[in-house]
Structure formats: C-alpha cells, structure tokens
Image 1 (cartoon, rainbow, N blue to C red):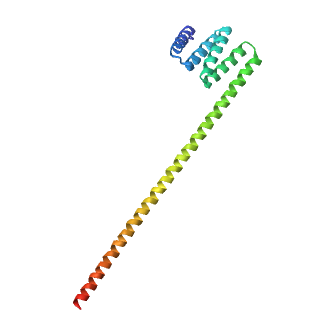
Image 2 (tube, rainbow, N blue to C red):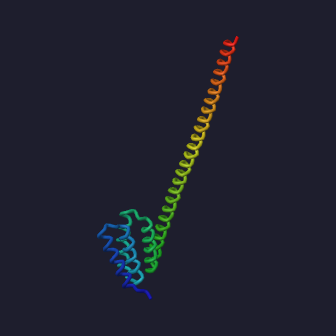
Image 3 (cartoon, rainbow, N blue to C red):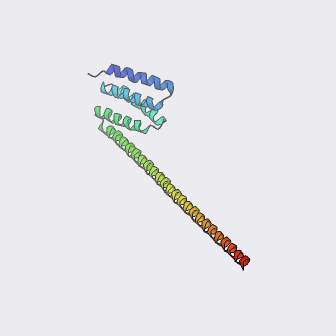
Length: 168
C-alpha cells in the first residue's frame, strides 16, 4: 500500500523545518523527494518545478550527491514524458558528476594514504633516533665505567708505589 499523502506531509514538514533552520542540503533532499512524489503521481509540471528548486538548493551548498540524484530524477521524469533526448542529457550529467565525485574521493583517499605513509615514516625515523640515542647513552655509560676502572687502577698503582717506597 503506497501512502502518497503521508509521504507528501513528511516531505512538506521537512521542507518547512529546513527553511526555518537554513539547512539547504536537507531542503534539497526533501524538495527532490516531493518532486519524485509528484512524478509518481504524474504531476510532471510540479515535479519539474520542484526539481528546479531542489537543484538550486543543492548547488547553493555544493551538495553534489544530491545533485546526482536530482539529475537521475530529471532523467526519469523526461523519460516518462517520452523526451528521450533530454533524458539522455540528464543521464550523462549524472554520470559525469558520479565520475567527478569518484575521482575526488580517490584523490582524497590517495592524499590521506600519502599523509599516513609520511606519518609512519616519521614515526620510524623517531624510533630510529631514539634507538641511536639509547645506544649513545649506553656507550657513554660504558666509557664512564672504563674511566672509573682506570682511575681505580691508577689509584691502586700509586698507593702500591707509595707503600713500596715507604717500605724500601
């Protein structure tokens, strides 16, 4: 059972809430939904007007995902009116936007991977420097112990020589 009147009420309420809060992306989605509802009920003139309105909202905030759906809805509307050339135009527009979004998403992911790789490389460099620092500290400690041992030997030797001179 399709309840178009309930859907119409929900979309209308959502549009009013979006206008009050200046939530342009929500306005675009809801207006497009109302346009789709008009298309299903064969009110093509109203659907066209609503799609125009939704497209304006989507472009205002660069809501490209919504824009793709609007173009697909326009494609379906024009196909329902047997306007296949215009329908093809919107189909091509939707596909171009999808490709653009996909390319932008891939570029963003690639950039994120590069940043992650750079962070990991820096972490490895920091760990290597920390390891070198620990080794240097161990080397200094070993040298200090060797010096202390030499001081002890020298002191023992000097005391031994003093004892020998005193005895002799």
